[in-house]
Image (cartoon, rainbow, N blue to C red):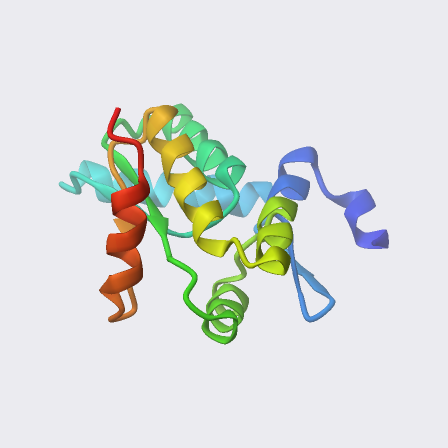
Length: 152
């Protein structure tokens, strides 16, 4: 992708291609968004819930950027269980969600739930303060995932 040559390293970590078109929040805009989020925290927010994601690096980078921006409140990762591929593709396209190679492989082999369980375990193991599930009115798969998460 020719455009990627002009992206900074942090922008390359955030870029998402949807229908062949790259989308990325520039570093300057990202910094403005973090500053805006800090104003919300200063106004009384006590918790942040992220947009859905499947790439743990996206969450870790966001938390690090928030901490550098002076945001110290808990940041819950937003997870959407993957029931069917059509809703998954619709939501990830709408939200411009980065799909890591590991998830692409799990989708191909039918191990979608296993990927989400592993992601949740890694998030909690890395110190995430909890998990927020986007159930889309289908709590059954969420409960199945919760039952498989390590209780350490």
